[in-house]
Amino acid sequence: MSFVTPDPFTTRPEIDGTFGVVASTHWIATAVGMGVLERGGNAFDAGVATAFVLQVVEPHLNGPGGDVPVILHDVRVGRPQVVCGQGPAPQAATISHLRDDLGLDLVPGTGLLAPCVPGTFDAYMLILRDHGTWRLADVLEAAIGYARDGFPLVERVSATIATVEGLFREHWPSSAATYLKEGGVPAPGTLFTNPVLAETYARIVREAAGGSREQEIERARRIWSQGFVAEAIDGFCRGEPVMDVTGTPHRGLLTGADMAAWQASVEAPVGYEYGRYTVLKAGPWTQGLATLQQLALLKGFDLDRLDPAGPDFIHLQVECAKLAFADRDTFYGDPAFVDVPVETLLSDSYNAERRTLVSETASLEQRPGAIPGFGKALDARVSEGARTAVGSSGAGEPTVGKIEATKIAATVPPDDARSGIVRGDTVHFDIIDRHGNMITATPSGGWLQSSPVIPSLGFCLGTRAQMFVLDENHPAALAPGKRPRSTLSPTMALRDGAPYLAWGSPGGDQQDQWIPQFFLRHVHAGMNLQAAIDAPAWHTEHFPSSFWPRTARPERGR
Image 1 (cartoon, rainbow, N blue to C red):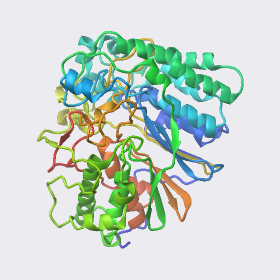
Image 2: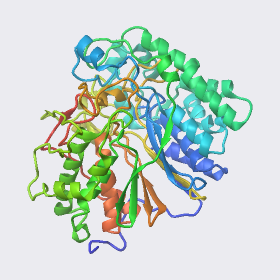
Image 3: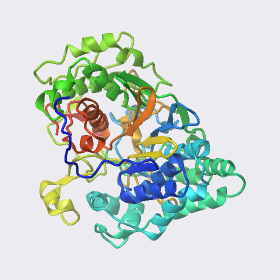
Image 4: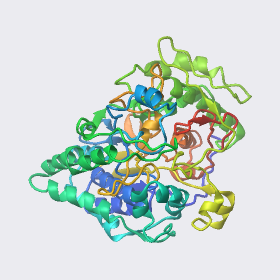
């Protein structure tokens, strides 16, 4: 580790302590989570309260209609667990309907054809019931308060609203009523409220009240999946057709029966041994396995001798990422529907063979592995254009990208407006309490730009089904009741068998490029956690995007 700086400059100090720590993508949510710990709540109480506040204060990045994978370690249980808050495709969402009846070759990136069952609420209730200590009203109090009384808009919310202002005015009037209240795009710093969303959560609290803590939580789950929330979603999807990126309005496919048939579930994480560390991810219904595959490939190189920001280190990591993501697009899918060769993908023999493909020259090819009886290569749609964060149609991935500067000049800082850049991602939080409980989660979906606001609920549905493939023979093929292969990817690591680190990143397809970079800097260069965060990061756009229109840029990256 010759490249370690003993006293590195960091943008802020690394946080040390014995009481607890909360990290999230918005300062208000972080403060709420820390307040829960200070008032006696544990990491899971704080996590649920933080998550609901993030839905309110970062509506361009996540919402109640979205989804979430969670990894947690409860000291009472004694082993890490994954909570799946990724809802499945509706029963009416079939390849035959979208491809043959509607003539589509991709699931649209916006509108009402792409929603899956919203998974966040039930996942948070499961965590609160089984691992938390607070009552329902207590964990929802802050979110209700900020939605009702207001919070200051960050510039990225304003910029996102600006890009879809025309869409809202022309096609999505319920979204215009929510986000264009004064007749125009709200300026950064505006005290913004969403009283309808506040009432939705307040009503759940009222209707669920009474009895034990666990009884209240179970009633809240039923109210969400079978009560007024499910009824409103069902009615909205059966109503008037809604414009989406295809240029044609479509009715929704999600029903109350789909909502009632699903609950969040618990499963074991997938782990990979890397020296002293065991790195843990959710299963192949996420892209998290791509981080583990990169570690399996990189384990064959002497990274200790390389500058973690130098060209040799970057070249190795990027080339291994290309190989891992080629496998993602070939083999990953919902393991309840398809066999995913996880053991082979992480095996020494498989990765020794794949490692030989890494040369001194960057590859411009998509090179998935070959495992007899498994997977199908995904055709790459090559594009020369930059990937768009949020287009005027509301589509595009919620991550770093470019939009037209003229549409955002009034709502973002001048330097960003001139370059046309809007920085945005999804959200993430990590929490550890004084007892040693840990939770890491990457909530997303249900962004304000994904589909119209449901007027009686104050939030919109997600569009995660855009990650399905309309090819029956592909592991990620669309099917009723199936989970899409999500980009959401929290991470946990053990060191010498004991819980050590919880981390993650916003960023769509970039998540499992930035996540291993952070880890490798810490492990191989001895950087402290803040220095590893501050260090330069990079990503490749070599492989097809998970988001509509699913394009690849083999020679591009940042």
